[in-house]
Length: 193
Image (cartoon, rainbow, N blue to C red; front, side):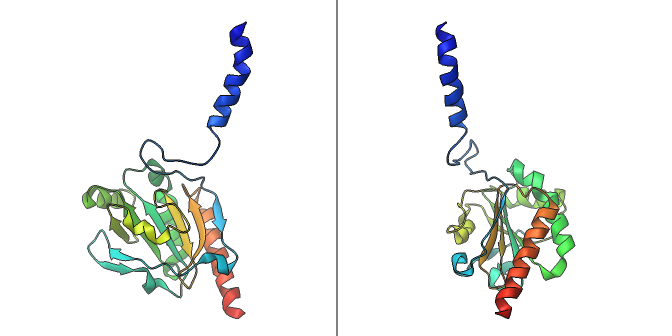
């Protein structure tokens, strides 16, 4: 009889444990919900992102070189299962959108650039990624997304400001392409006014 009276309380406690603010999981990163969040009010986008680094292929890359174009930035790691799930969607979107929309990856917390390059080869990733083994490159986006959120995809407007965020796994190619098109439309409207 005692179990029967505590069962509803136990069920309620378990349900509440699944709610609340997201925290780090056992791998030490914060998973997101994969839902796109567009920042339609330009004043809320903040300043242009200031980020430069060295790619996995040893070349210098500065995000300021993509200004004038809507740009997709994806935070990933070869150790991240959710990153594996979204890799094909990102590459398909990259190919579909073409040179008009630069894609840049940020490889975080990989102990070896060799692991990250193997990941790129294994998933046919053709866009460059900045190598950030300590994850410090993500601090450029700290005002918009937690530096420990992996994966995270940010869409920058033509001025280099964060205009959309997908915290967590990109759900599919179409979703990402539609978010990019929305940011392109917003950028055109802003330029026209």
